[in-house]
Image 1 (cartoon, rainbow, N blue to C red):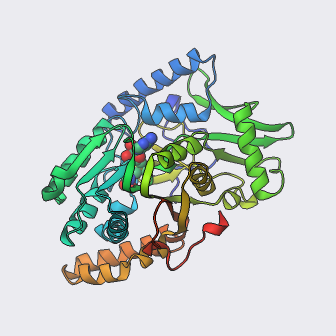
Image 2 (cartoon, rainbow, N blue to C red):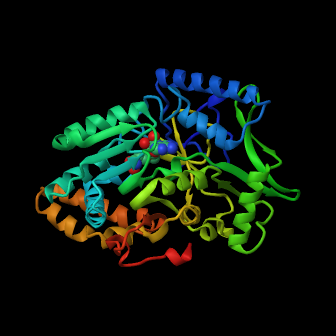
Image 3 (cartoon, rainbow, N blue to C red):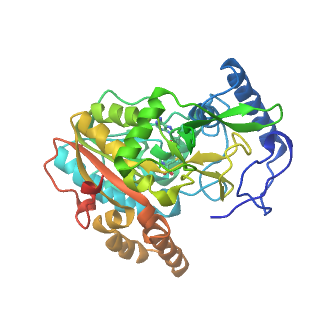
Length: 410
Ligand SMILES: C[S@@+](CC[C@H](N)C(=O)[O-])C[C@H]1O[C@@H](n2cnc3c(N)ncnc32)[C@H](O)[C@@H]1O
């Protein structure tokens, strides 16, 4: 993790604890202008709400305000020229290995559709489709559910260039389909959903929302509402004791509803959610007393959500226990839960690597080797990223969970 500099005064100024002077690249004038428009919009939202908004509302606006938010406007976002790199961006090896799991599920369900919410640059869709086509297992339809019009366009270009023969089967929409028969696969979507922040004080839990002090956004603690109170109760019940005074963390109000909604739509098949996170008990362990929120700006990871609004991503780890609860409450079951490393190895990463390595030159093989390390190493994505399979009417053991299934730990 690299900490970056507080750039300058005014609305761009950082108030964060951890930011040190470093090599933070300054945004171009057009990007600054864009960010200033977004700041003005969020200030209006705060004014309209009486001077304070919850952090989840702030996050929703800075990431998803139509035409202004980080995901809904034109920033590059993913990859070397953007702010962060995801597993599918690292190497085609990731999506090609994942395709083996997709093929097994499509065969077992007789399903002909893959649904991918939040497809980013479209690179995962392209490599999954190309890989399935090679083994004659391509779906009839690959439906991308993407709220960002800018990303929809980018996805189309990526698929046209990497898997042109598969482009005809890809469709886009900005809302979930009525039902899923077959498979849903989502990488790093849950962590992009807005969350609230809270702190435990001598006087109980406080919600850490956002206000505007005339020059910049600042954090302000207020009494929690009944919904956050219930969320904290569920956390304390999972860890078996009250959270200690001084404990700060995040809680995703909309996660249960989001996961329930997809579970209800699952008619027959599997929802595969992949993200950084863990069980509720692990997520709210005493050692994580500063939470897991991270912001990403030009490959600098830091903890100040008020710097460069609209030009940086904001994320936090996912509580996978909530995904499991939402599934069970809506007639599904947990078909498996494991680390990314175990999942990829179970899906045949090594065989994929050997196959792909034989087709490329030495330099490309070396960079594939590095990608494998990042995908599998515990200090990188191997352990912190988890995969959960939510299934309905599936009577097959999934290959991704055959090496290790930690579902009982949820
Ligand atoms: C961190 S990016 C991950 C992109 C891609 N899956 C990857 O791994 O490279 C998050 C993605 O989730 C999308 N997203 C955010 N909220 C969403 C929602 N409610 N439904 C579907 N996609 C959503 C964003 O627009 C973006 O494409």
